[in-house]
Image (tube, rainbow, N blue to C red; front, side):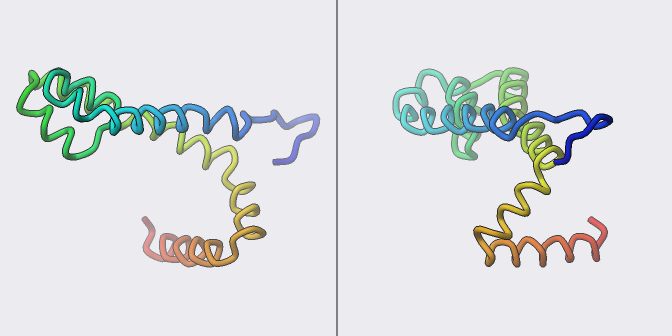
Length: 120
């Protein structure tokens, strides 16, 4: 990402990936605490770890509105951060991948060509 007099510098990779890491950590804590949280606090379990099995468990034990709010918010929480990582650091990460992991880079290039060809 070039900087110059007319270019504004975007957020750093660390600033963009910290929320993703925190959400991943919360998911690990939820997984560890599943036996404790599942019977008494299924919505808290979904807020920590929105796996399909936890969603199914909470769906029958929670009011519909609460289940939808907590489930949708938690499932969508990381999406904007992943988008911003791609938007601000995508080219930089692709170059890093080309240098460090050539097999992954080839797979990504094939995937990108397929997406461009299919117009997804």
